Image (cartoon, rainbow, N blue to C red; front, side):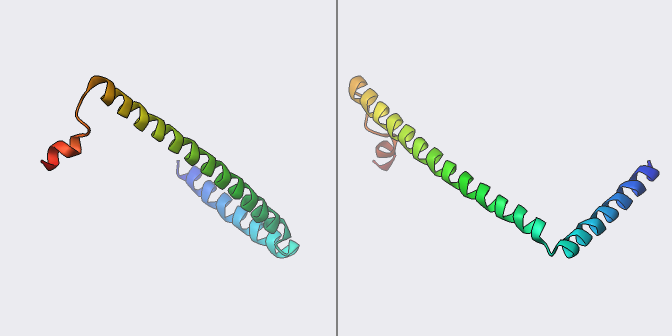
Amino acid sequence: MIKLIVRLIFLAIVAGLIFIGVAIYSGGEKFRWFGKRVGQESEKMGEKADKIKQGSEKVIKGIEQTTEKMKEITGSKESKKDEKSD
């Protein structure tokens, strides 16, 4: 088990050295490409999140309208907040 841990630590150190070597050798161009790509994807995710938010707002409004209609149909009190404030 200790050999496995030592090997994993050694592998992490070697991977870090290779990462730094590639970054220095290529001037960071390969990593800049990766950063640009991540930025583009995060913008897409932000747009999708906005669409989801708009959809959820529509659902919430629909639920509120439905509950209001149900209250009208059943003749129940307007809200529980009004009962508590009395």
